[in-house]
Length: 545
Ligand SMILES: Nc1ncnc2c1ncn2[C@@H]1O[C@H](COP(=O)(O)OP(=O)(O)OP(=O)(O)O)[C@@H](O)[C@H]1O
Image 1 (cartoon, helix red, strand yellow):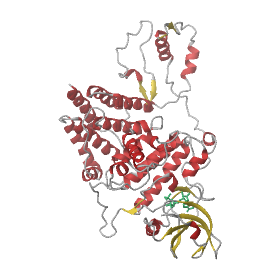
Image 2 (spheres, helix red, strand yellow; image 1 turned 180 degrees about the vertical axis):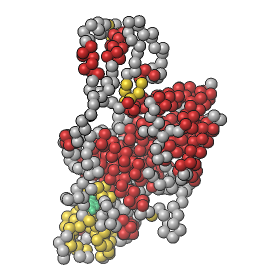
Image 3 (cartoon, helix red, strand yellow; image 1 turned 135 degrees about the vertical axis):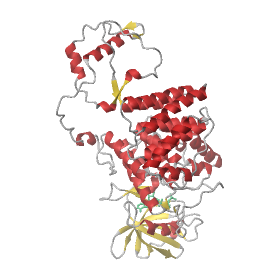
Image 4 (spheres, helix red, strand yellow; image 1 turned 90 degrees about the vertical axis):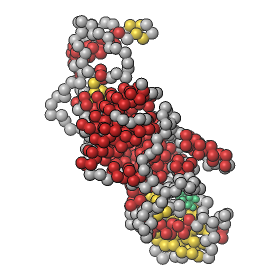
């Protein structure tokens, strides 16, 4: 329906229309002011006969969201002549225009973490109030006007819907019937956009994940690069590209949180309540680790290099740290380096210029915590047998690296595995690594390892049959169990892993193991948990044979 702006009256109710802020398929939005108070507002106008009466839907949704942070206030609504209008808080620029206006190919990590935190909080609010947004995109996230310019607001509830029936108090039903796509081309989840599934909370979160990944990808997500589709054929190509894109390819080079978040959203069951708190904390932690402060606030433009200077100085250590690399270790390293051949040119063959004092100096200054480091010498991924140490060199001692690095390496080995034998080796290493470092708590990287393992076992494009996921009831059952029952779940997994007949079954067990461990308060791998991992390695080997 064409927008005949000229016929829109200059006054609607108590509001005088000023400038047009934007217009979309469904209507126009104006800056307006209250003729009595002079207060500025935003006024959305839509033809009452519009084929898609989104203003009416918004009029129904807005009251459910009033009073919450980051939700615009609904001041008035009504009909004047052939126009329906909504009067809401006047806000600032959308993330879309901020991103485009920056002229940069990708957004900075600080800003993206702030967006992640705020948008997930907004969705938590909406979902707690029983509303799905269903059209998450950059144009529907806007910042406030000063002094609220660090707050991201959600707008455009024209596609929103209550997912809890107000009468029966039940979640809307899922359906096997394919439905027409509703949302936007770029960020609507694969399930809803490409497979015609019924949208639920998980899809709002998946759209958020795609939006964040888009912002961090130079040039944006691959399927967004040729603009909005004008033909059915182009739309089909977009859907195909979206559906086929592998999570790890989309997230290459980004902090692992983004890939994990997308995978998490895609694993959620239809009616499952997402763990908003967990992901808000993950993005806060990522920001903190990256040296950013005050990250709950979206600050645009991002503070130039400020963050490192604002970081509090580290507390002075009471005593000198234990050196991570001893002189003897350093000598080992140098010895090994001496044996390296670079283009047949021996290097560092002469160690006489390495004075003990220098070695000591290099050894100092390292302050890695014991729990954060691992023994690289136990790394078997490199293959081959270690050469005998020469007689005049003291026995090798471990070189230490960060735990996260080692886990990441193991994760990549899972993704590189092309058969069950290789997977078995990596799982055994993972288990050994956790035991040897005495670090039984599963960190983010540990869960990323399990995610990768699950994917390898369940992904039909790798080397196994596709997995049918657990039903929502089964999933909810596991999650709602008290701690002692969860222990029982791990004991069951331990028993079942020895008899699993296929990778598909193993994938289910890994998913259960991840869920149960994640839901436990300490996220530790118990004795049964280790027995499960070891059993998994043995079973994979047996299935490989
Ligand atoms: N409250 C507001 N204050 C300031 N600008 C706003 C406000 N609401 C919307 N806008 C601007 O107008 C644009 C369109 O708004 P909105 O998405 O609500 O309208 P729409 O007609 O549903 O658009 P579309 O058809 O693109 O979904 C937004 O991207 C934003 O730039």
